[in-house]
Length: 381
Image (cartoon, rainbow, N blue to C red; front, side, top):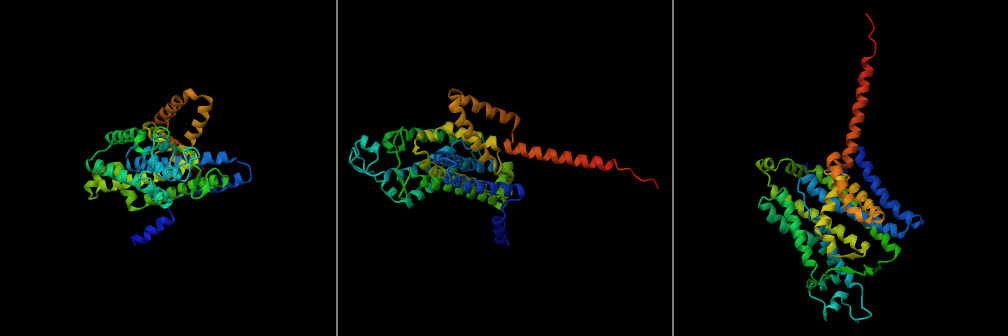
């Protein structure tokens, strides 16, 4: 019976018509946007920009799994995003080919440092399948080790947030150092080929956009399915009252470690698709300030909602794109004001605002209906 229920929830992960409509609108966007590009209505540059926005949306959803549905505010989600990007970036760097100046196939920064041979830990990344495996494994292993140590020590709340930020800061300092063979300040860039295709071709840009859209839809569907299972119910119970969950006989530590690893893997996959579209990955992507940006995306869209993080990530990215051109010196001030406004006046985010508006309209409609019925005259006997 439990297997049949799981299959039923997988086939019908959404409970309302609104959620189904939202999912199909996302799917339509992923399909129609490349078609419009092929028709010449949208430039290849815009396709690349929106492909990055979709990766940001997946990254925001990965934090929402932790913060919105498990009550764990992670300020280091950008670290897992960057680790996935670096893992795939190593493969992309090896596909550049021989440098015309140095006459070697080594990455440029290794030539600058006097390397004569590729380091041993780089060699497996010639294989694209190993690179994809590393995109999943590296963030997952880091999250497992850190999560197991933190959750077994019963670290939670603000202490967990501070520790994740400290981990991110330490990793940033390590990646800024050239001797770790990750490019130092400059990181990885100047990519040319991905799976044998020219990364600068319009067809490759479209393929990366579609891949980002498919990842978004799969994560969106998977999250909706997970929330309908027994695991998802325990997950939300941990958010509401972890002590009660433990007293009920469940190991909250195991649940939290699994969710933490899952969210890290999703963030790593988003980072891997982001890197070839952005054309660069460097330690700036894992700075603690980036982790705070992700928190703002989720808060603006609606923490603990399926579609909220997608809205928040895209809207804040659009706002940043506009404001950094119009008011480049005031972007951080604008972002701070938006966050303060949301916390004070829209604690449930944009999606929560819509839900409150719908509830208000239903209540008002019901009130008018009751009032109308009370005005019907009663015939005298």
